Image 1 (cartoon, one colour):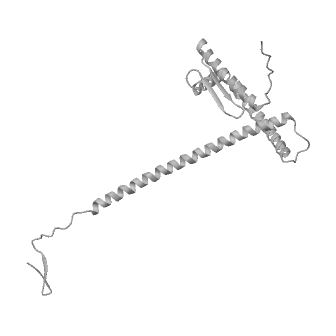
Image 2 (spheres, one colour; image 1 turned 90 degrees about the vertical axis):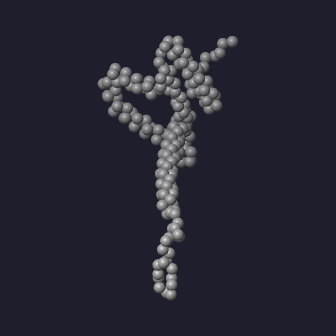
Image 3 (cartoon, rainbow, N blue to C red; image 1 turned 30 degrees about the horizontal axis):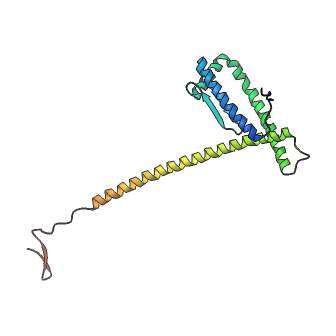
Length: 201
């Protein structure tokens, strides 16, 4: 029995959506590997999940090498197009950010009861997507700060260990200097007291 055609639209159920993502991601990575082996092609594949998790595949070498090769190729092929698109990209990015902020503000007002009416499914999905992206960025920033703090503590630990070793060496050095041999008592001219006058015999 043949399967029915799957409609290409967003899967509403989050569990089904995650299962489909995992299955299709694995199939896509497998097909990319097969294409690389069969046709001796160099393939780079980058996938970001809805939660911002990164999946990548470089069939030959590293992803960094593939990206550098791609940048070199596109820079040489279309130098003018690359330079002309920067102002447009910045303007479009500003408009997208403004739209995201407006959507999030509307969602916040709706959540706290300050909004008028109800939000549509599309608006709620946009709020959900933006919140997930923002949560990912916040977690990334938090992780970077924690890593910097850990590195600072490791540097401080190294400095304290070096200072401790230096002080320990100084203590050992001073102990060896002050630990001299006792005076000899068998001198040929002992000092004695006779009738309150110091005399040597």
